[in-house]
Each structure stands twice: as C-alpha cells, then as structure tokens.
Length: 358
Image 1 (cartoon, rainbow, N blue to C red):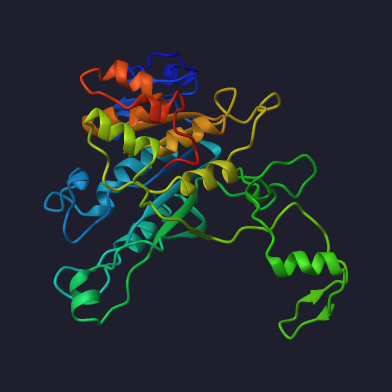
Image 2 (tube, rainbow, N blue to C red; image 1 turned 180 degrees about the horizontal axis):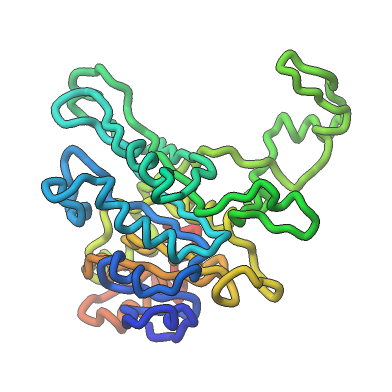
C-alpha cells in the first residue's frame, strides 16, 4: 500500500505502508517519537509489553537485567508528553502480574502510574478504566488451577492520562474540554428497566438516604443512550477475523497478544471528535491524529481508519508489522502481495476488515 497520507509529512522516516489516512513505521518508538513535531498528536492509545514473571516473545524490548520497567517506559512517556497536543490524551492498557514463585501480586503498574503522574513527568490521571476479558484463561495455573488458592485474573488496568486538565473547560461559554472528551460519543443502550421507566413516565422522586435529590423528570429524559461506565468488557479470542484468516493464508506471523478492538474504538470515539472536521482547529493537521507506539497488529490504526481519523503506528518487530498490513487489504490484494500463497478468494470477496473485526 503506497497511498500518500498527510501524516507521512510528520516524520522524516519512510513508512512501511500507508493508507489515505495513516501510516505504519518500522523502528524503535523512542527514535520515531523524537522525529515527530511537538503538539502534533491528539491521542496515543497503546498496550506496552507487560512486566510478566515469564517474559513473552513479544515483550523482549524491555530487559529487566538492564533497567527497571518504570525507567524503561518513561523513556517513551516523556516523548509522548512532548508530541501530545495541549488537549491530548495518553491511554495505556497494562496488565497485572504475579510475583515470581509466590501467590502475591506485583505492583509494577501502580508504581509506573506514580512515576507518570509525579511532578517531574507531569501527566494527570484523568480516569482509570478496566478491561474485563470474560474469556481469559485462568492464570497463573499454579495458584488458580492446581492449588486453588487464588481467583482467576480477568481484568487489566487502563490508565487515561493527560498532560493538561482544565477545570474551566466545557463549562464556560464557547469553551472546549481539556483534555478533549465527550461521553455523548460513546453512549450505550438503555437497560430494559430504564426503557420501561421512560415509557411509564412514573418514578419515586425525592431525596435519597445518600443525599441525592431525584427530580420528577430527571429519569424520563431520552438523551440518546446511557452514559458508559469505566469497565470495558470484551474478549480477544476471535480466530475467524479478517486479520486471522489473511495471516494464516499468507503464512504471516500473527501477533500473539492483541487487545480487542473495543478498547481503541471506545477511546478514539470518546477522546476525539467525530467527522466532519470543517471546524476542527485544535489539532496539528486538519483532523485528529491517533498514535500507537507499540503497534502490534495495528488494531488501533485500523480502528482510527474506520472512524475517519488520521493514524500512526510504530512497531519494532518486522514480522508483526508486515502482518498488520493485511487489516487494510482485500483478499485479492493480499494474494497479489503474497503471491506464493493460494487464498480462497471466494470466501473473502473484496472486503477488508472493519472496526467490528478485531
């Protein structure tokens, strides 16, 4: 894919592949971040290698014998802070881990959060979120399956950080939120009980023991949906997605630790405005730019593409970067690019993956 994109003008490096809206780059994110202009990125959504008791193949960028995890990650974070726009956000999905050899939890992700939000680094914790994966396998097996002394670990933390937070934003006339955010862009379906309540038009109004005073009309207003909470529930076990099928047929290495499309989809929509961008004046380019500094399978870039944002993806491992391109290719395009593989094109037609296909 060689389509030119305005985001390629942000870096002097050559893109591995690009679309009309984005570009993917091979290299160490620390070097690529240094190449970006200050204040050029509207949101960074990423999932770094975790500090695991047993290091995975895809997590070999950090060497625990060389430096601690927090110091390693801060090398990226300091540059992220520089390239973020004043209204920008830094979203990090980061899993927990048990300490080696005993049934106690590591606090490394909390130690990292403390470092990121200290006065020296200067990020603010806008809100903490959680990814609940109901299909996650019980782990660690020693403590959960064999000895049965711990519950299965089914959530990971998501830190929503921002370089700036304004208490006046979105409250004064003609003001805009800092960081950029609007929960009306991510409303969920009303519950059945709420729908029944709105249809009946009756509610037991008045003051509650908690001190909340419920008005007679407060629960009857249809706002287009319910305000979401800070728990994202999604599985990442799909094996029949466009990405999976194309990788298998082309003989490409699939990234083994992909987060689900629901995570970047939620934050891209929540923290960047929807098109059209005729009046967009807050960003470096003519529409928001989404960056993933640990690109992996590039589900973040694909999500941004599907929702009309610009995107950049940085990935250090060439085999995962190569495989990520299939997210943006039709079956026929994959056959032409990887012509030593026979693909069943009738099965795939001319459709590429979409934001509903992780």
